[in-house]
Image (cartoon, rainbow, N blue to C red):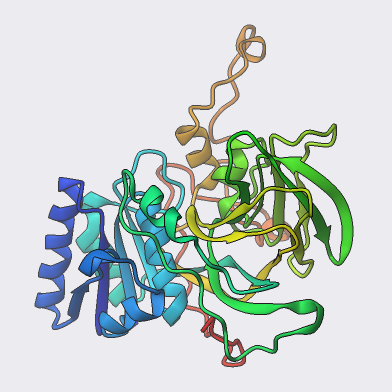
Amino acid sequence: MTVRRVGMVVHEGRSAAVDAARTVREWCAEHDVQCTDIDVWRDGGRHSAQEEVEAAGDPDLIVTLGGDGTFLRGARLAAEHDALVLGVDLGRVGFLTEVPVTVVRTALDAVRDERLTVENRMLLTMRASRTLEVPSGMHELMRYGRGPMLPPPRVRSDCEAGDDWGIALNVAALNDVVVEKLARDRQVSVGVYIAGRLLASYSADALLVATPTGSTAYSFAAGGPVVSPRAEGLVFTPVAPHMAFNRSVVAAPDEPIALRVLDRSGQAAVSIDGQLRGVLDPGDWIGVYAAPHRLRAVRLGPMDFYGRLRERMNLTDAPAAVADGTPAPLWPVTTPPPGDLAHLALPPAPGEPAAAPCPPAARDPRDPSDG
């Protein structure tokens, strides 16, 4: 693809990220590409994704230099402008970033020369019974140990509103949308509806709806399933519920999930990709559903998601399984698949050449942008 404008989101607290940012700037200067640092905390406040990408000159490639948190900030910007996003890995337990910091220049060359695969990741968006607001006292509380808060999501003017469907909000969540308790001594009581039908009323610390990408984040920590990021679906997971049924439910991508705060509940916070974005009162509700567009993430080759899962989660083999005999091989298949299995997605074994990357998929012009 022709790269004309690059926006960078840099974890300034890591010297390796600052050094890598210098490499990106040098590459852009050599190839006559505009490069802009996107400082999401500039001027002492946080800004909407639209304001940030406009200030950066509407980049067509977002490069994130950091861990998964940095990638999530970049993904929010890329989703706003339908830009590609390339994650450079400087994190500790990351699942989202793509390339090691040592090959930043090679990765940028690959993007310029179209030696890449564009992976479409599912996003969540939402409606609500009213616009989200954050009480003034919450701002100072949430500043402890971090930067300023993001503003509440703005209303989408291109969508119908009213009746039972509420107000469409400008949200693009790559990981999850969470409704959680505000007071430590009081759980939230929430009615959970899937595809328009009441599943159950929960009393819990939190209730979350995750994408397949977000299944390895908060949902995983709460006991939810690990889902391939290539899958389509919404993962509902209760956190510490006071009821016998404490399992996750995986809904189809066209089945919306609504969370209604019940009358006897305390207030509930709404977090989007880990960022507090509003507070709900009893009687308020949000509806979470798959966004009509996808995040376009750059891949330079097949992603070995399950190998990364084994490595990052330090998975070890059960002692009883390996006490007698030979341990299971890491790569049991070393020969090409037969014709009837040629359609299967398998990462190459070590030493095998990677499959030729696919050209970027053309985006359907009928897909509405999120804002």
